[in-house]
Length: 96
Image (cartoon, rainbow, N blue to C red; front, side, top):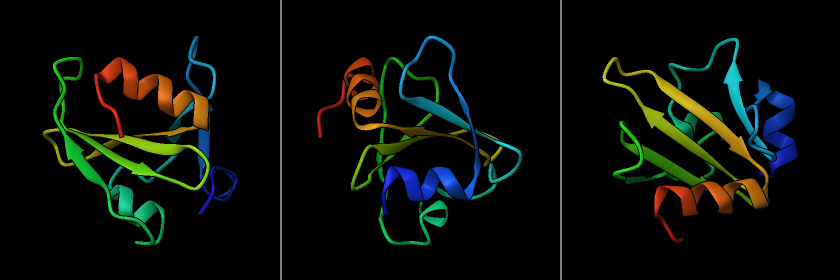
C-alpha cells in the first residue's frame, strides 16, 4: 500500500506548518493503524519523551503512518509523505 492509496481512502487534512503531513478527519479514529491499511502491515509501538501518548508507526511503500493512541482508546492518525515521515520520526527521536 502506498501513500496515494491511503490518501484516497480517507479524509486527510494538511497539518499547518508541517509539509508532507496530514491528519485523519471525519471518522476512523476508532480504527487501529492496521485497520486503516486492511491489516497489510503491522505497527510498531514506541514511547517518546516528545509525545504524550504511545506512538504506533507503520512504514508504507511511500511514506508512513504515525498514530498516537489516546487514553480513551481512540487514535490520532497522521499520514506522511516520505520526507514528512522521516522528519517527524527524527522529531520524535526515532530511527527506523
